[in-house]
Image 1: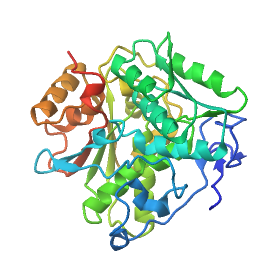
Image 2 (image 1 turned 90 degrees about the horizontal axis):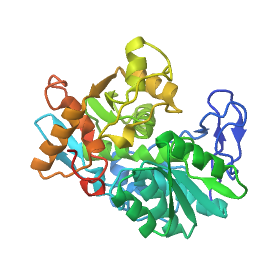
Image 3 (image 1 turned 45 degrees about the vertical axis):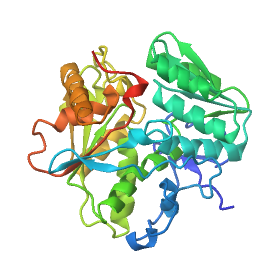
Length: 367
């Protein structure tokens, strides 16, 4: 079996062995990156490969998975003449988080911990629970009090334990981190563990293949912890670096106006949020992250791409969700934020793709 690449801290260079259960830098406590610089296969080489995200094997830090549920290869459908939607809510657990969860579960299976823990506002938890079930791993998911009953039901249906934590999304994360420091525990963190990002990047590899070796002018992406955007930035760098992409797309990051620490930092021209941005309730619970650990990386990725940040109000989110449903696409409110940001002309004729990240059945209509 091919050796796993090591993780390292991008802030101070500390290296973490591939089989270690350490989940963050021991010095600065920041998230880790992966020492992995793959070369994607040319377009013509993909013909006849497995019809899942594992067709991009050259770009993935794990090979020959045993826990796959056929995730990936989601449809791309037009919304307008210039804007298309990628239907990632058609994944096995009904959200894009399967892309990263399958890599975390496969990594955990190979390391062999006593249990896996995760924290989530819902979709990551359901994905980790499903793939841990597939891998035969005991799993506990810490979720904020008030998480959608349907998401809790889904987590428990997979045999995982859902622990509701009073105090919101950050309190759930703190509870998971305390559990993660217990012996023989694998923390399946979609934020701190870089394997998750190397799963989400397949979103862009699929776009590139389905668009015949190119990408749109703009990738519009929802941002809370930024795992889809950072994965997209990885894929763009891989494809462009290999000479398989003539032009890099701009990354447009979308936040709910109610919880927009990164957009606020962007407006100030700052490298990171202040940590004091006001927070209000939002329909977009999946991106309601007041202090994203990879904030500096997210802001830098958007800046380097020539992109921007956009925010959307609760009314615009609600109307965008209803509009997508009227087109036959029933997604949760968080999944509607990108369409909310661009459906009224913000793109000015540029071509773009928006991700529809989670199914409406998970949380219902915003009312």
